[in-house]
Image (cartoon, rainbow, N blue to C red; front, top):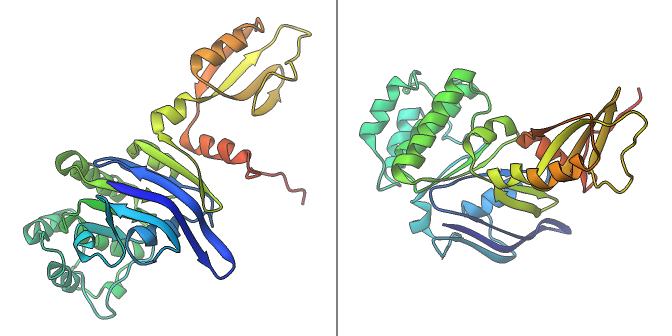
Length: 297
């Protein structure tokens, strides 16, 4: 569905995207994550046809996105900062989008008024950030897009509305095969909805895997060694900490491989604990000098 091939984008002497490649399959929910400045928003502006690449390809269904109205009619985008005409109400924007998107569903728009309970005849600039986000979701879903691109999508929404919004999106994925690409710093939330994850750093993709593969290839080990024994220096842990006699290790590999390696130490006790997406993010980027550092004040 979405193909990014060897994408390069420079701003003056700064390379924002450096030979970036990744794929998003139809009907999947793809989480694009990375630290601030990694290039996530720049990727999104290419996918939505706002930026023109310096080199490489940005394709949807094998068609170039830039200056392609046919592709853009199948795509909805909710940015972190919502755009609307200065004096426009949500209903005004509904009429505007209805003239651009052939599949805009006016009946669904009215139906969703029961979910997003705000005055759609009130100027959007007078709405709170959370209400503006609700307005954007109401409009985007009614466009009936094949591809939904989200940048910090639920920032500003209360917990109940966040759950409501994700429910609507996941129903669209299930019922219509909508493809979703979402960039967010809320990794706990992405863990509940994404089936594939790409981790970016400095304009490059460090890795791209299904969430299950990502979680199956790294684990946290807690163990207690026999009295007087120490961990071999070449044991291969990518992170290690100690609390009393309990060692906590972060190790790469399958659970079976890690269990066999730890069992060979004849520990008094050991346990494998799956890592959250947030922990995986931290430890994967730890290899490129991105980690929490202690600062003495």
